[in-house]
Image (cartoon, rainbow, N blue to C red):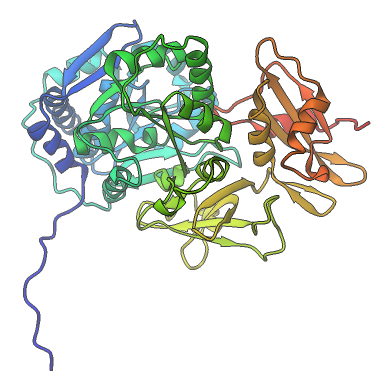
Length: 531
């Protein structure tokens, strides 16, 4: 009979409170920089942030915040928003970021569905609030900086943390609602802490206290992809761009603060690329700058162009439901001998799952991508993957009986384990019984020197059921012919996969988070007449 084993680990909950304390005690002198709406630069330290986040927790507790209460934020990327990221969950509440770019009726629906009790709002966003103010019932509203500063002034910073459960909610975001109503995802303390650790790994983003991080993704969308949490955990300098994500606005901060790591959707980086190539040598950027890109598939051309400038692009894939980082793409050592085309083709994939994230592809093997890979729906599970939506029981079918989340993304997984997104299930084009990936066509089109942006949608066809229609935005001064673009695509795609028609447009519609609005485009061109 085996003898009992004595000893073991402390039961130490994984919550955000120790990360906040670590930041204040170990990195007190590290800077946090924010560009305010009036264009002024605000600077303070981690010690200031630590003190004020604790004061916010004290003030909310004194105001009657109960465990699990939702505190909404309607704010740009700035230092006070970071205080809310930590101060609200430190008090036992759940920080709920409201997407300021949504329609007022959507904002009202989301705030009411989440049952938000308090609201912290930037003064410059009061006009946005007024458009739905009479449809919601916030108990108290704190306006930054006016009443928010008064709220903190009367609160002690020697806050005594409540007993926080690592499985309790810390933050909350809603999906974009592209399919049905927006759905709420609650992130537990444990999931955020584990996600922050995974993000900081060398084979993820290699985050350290030597970094200067500028989150170019919105703090109101999937928690700025988790970068604020990871930066605080590791003690990195943080830079917030406020409301100005223009190429010049970002590049000025990259230079003045010597940013080493940033993130954002491809549309942002296309504009930055154009600016850097147009004004070569104007900005003195930090050597080895890393750009993390996601939100939509990033074309190979972006990787190539940034490489020529000495800037390294890293692809990730994730969703609101995955906290959001699930896969990250880096070359493996065995691939160093590959030729450039092979390397860029791999870097444009969504990459390998992070530790503890499990992936599988469910399909019957009968559907293939243009490169011959078998296609199927990507399903994921892991400690920072949502297990349900908040107060939305009718969406239970988004999870399998054995606990996997249906992403709705159609992917292939190669022999190395790298995930490659082919399309969303609703955006795949089925022509004559064969599948065509709109994402592959779009990324190839953007690789043409004359193309600024492209979208490919399915349009009904009398013979083939559906055919791809390409909508193309050209760069200033460019004037390629339709045949020139078709010949360019024919280097990579079979003739039947090429767009049946190419339409030049001035601009493409985007969602509030920078993704192409395929639904809008399909509706606009539903009556397209094929020649």
